[in-house]
Length: 246
Ligand code: BTN
Image (cartoon, rainbow, N blue to C red):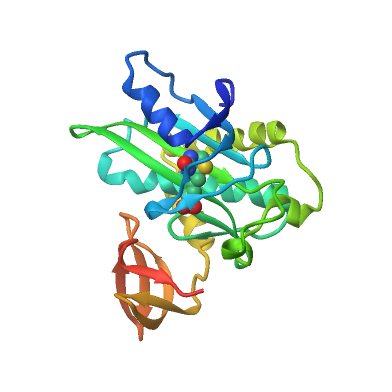
């Protein structure tokens, strides 16, 4: 809810920091947010790095305790957070935002933000989730390796944004979506998520086991696997099994 935001000047990764704090004895409140001005070893999905120029962007981790969800429904949290981010970005940017499966935020063919959720389970109970969010805000120069496929709020709005104000607004969207998930609006969230999938319904090249194949992205399964149609024959994939060819 944005009331419990701790800002740190310099950390390797806010996700790591929050997980470390969780392993200590002092209990943390659900909704605690760890924000970094500078994150020098930020992490992305699948072992990638998340680079962010100090002081320019939103890099934070939010502590949630989704014990109301069965761990087999972990994907629902991904959906709720992705939907919150996409809706917030669309209202801020006044332009369509898509969700590149499973949870990257895209404007056109450029990535503007990403999510890294790390779950902490205790037996069959889902104890907590460390929800790491990175949004490119005021940064306008990116390393050549990613520059052509990266966007920031400033590149779109042509103005600097106040990070604290954005954060307050973003937290409202996340809070609303999370409460929605608690109150059973998951079906509507999944519908929004599916409709906003990057490349939905388009014939697109994918890499499957290192082989390039054309397929039509048609949706996701209940557990979050990507569904792709090949000549009207649907196959579903795990994140490690398929990649978009850009
Ligand atoms: C991705 O796009 O692959 C996910 C990027 C997630 C980046 C955020 S920034 C705050 C938090 N701390 C991290 O180390 N990563 C996440």
